[in-house]
Length: 283
Image 1: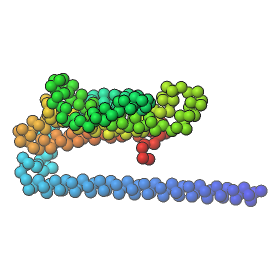
Image 2 (image 1 turned 45 degrees about the vertical axis):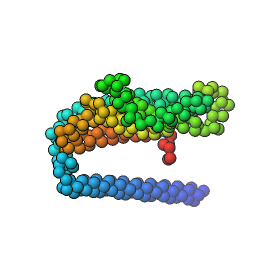
Image 3 (image 1 turned 120 degrees about the vertical axis):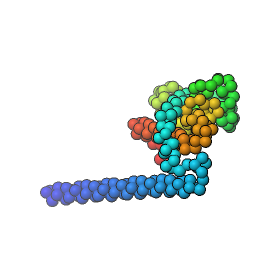
């Protein structure tokens, strides 16, 4: 009896050692991959900056400023760049929030009712085919200058990817799970809220991540056309004064603003999916 107990303990210890060794191997591999990825990113950055510096030496500063000249433009206009960044970020946030809300609501309605999809969806596809940049002058003529045309254009441009991903997510709910819910007595509204909408969340969040990037581009286009504030307007003004260094500085500030929105959406997506124990599309 004692021998059997000792053998069982020995087997358990061996299994624990193997599990710990596998965990250490996996952690070491992940660490190596992280180091390689970070080094590769640094290398790409060095190559881009080096190539930029090499090209800048061949052109006048009014055509292509060097990294150092761009930094000088940033430090010289940092207060204006900061205030313009706040204005642009506000326009992006408002426009995207409206577009995403409409996209989720309309997408849920279309995804839930197939007949409604057949009526409305072709017109939505036609709407998406219209270049939103071409609508900017018309929107400004109708609404006027100021905040609203930029918010409107961002909402119009960003809602479609949210809409499409919502429709696809709602309609891809597992058929067996739907039958199970109905068999347990759940009505259509309960099935929608507790099954279809939850299972559609990964796709909806992906659409949100895409939509926020489109909203950023749309706001800048509107600022180019009739902006008096914002990074797009600052770039137009600096370009008219042949201050290319400030144009590049504002462009990089815009890149930072766009990245902040994108990674905020990505972090929110990861947090929500982990909380609900769901997986992103493609995982």
